[in-house]
Length: 121
Image 1: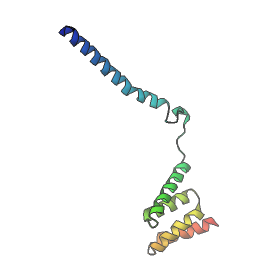
Image 2 (image 1 turned 60 degrees about the vertical axis):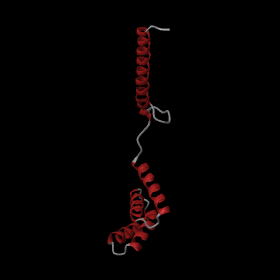
Image 3 (image 1 turned 180 degrees about the horizontal axis):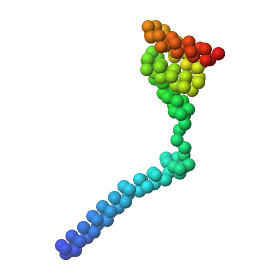
Image 4 (image 1 turned 90 degrees about the vertical axis):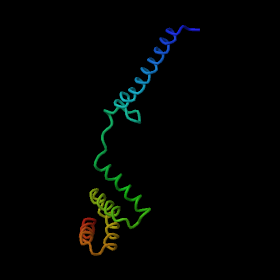
C-alpha cells in the first residue's frame, strides 16, 4: 500500500491534471468557434445576411403566424410592411385589404392599400 504522503501527492497530481484538462477543454470551443461557423466555412468567408434576406425571413415568420391566427393585426401589419419594403406591392394588397376590413376606422390601412394598388399597376 502507498504511504500517506505519496498517496496525497498522487491525489494532488491527478486532481491538478483533471482541473487543467477541464480548463483546456472549456477554452477550445472559444477558439474554434471564432475561426469557423457551424457549417465549417471560415468566418471570414461568410457574409452577413442582406436586408433583403432579413425581410424575406420576416415575411416567412409573419406568414407562419397568420396560418395559426389569420386575423392577427401585428402579423398582418408586419407582412404588409415587409412586402412593401421588398417592393412586392401586389403581395402587400391582401394583408392590407384584410386590415382595412377588420379595422375600417383606421385610415392608415386605407391609405396604404390605395398606395399599394397604385404601385402594383
